[in-house]
Length: 175
Image (cartoon, rainbow, N blue to C red; front, side, top):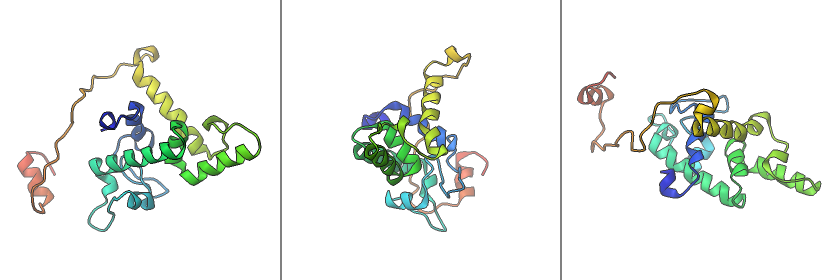
């Protein structure tokens, strides 16, 4: 999906920073899912959340919403991916105010010059570190199994509501 949209491939690792690639991960700020949407941002980007379903945990729907949100943030911050990624974590208002404070004080307005919360300040460097590890694992004494660049699963519309146990039986897997 990132390739289709012409976005930097490093964004594929962003879900690893926030959720450890866990589609049911949660946080103390009530963020949920692979892309760690807080309830209000999830709703803003069309992710349904009710007693029956939380689409923040839907890999396909949440990925679409996350990439749409990141594209918006990138435009909002004039193409600066570091600021966009920081805002994805800490909020566009928080990052915007930090940029404005620095500008007003005559200080640099790049990500690394901003006064942000520890979590947001660490978010971009964590992504950069993971990117380096994945980009050249041997340089760090690591070895990763190859991951083929093809879809991992296929979405199927059963055309009706299906009980989880029935779906598991048809798929030949445990519930």
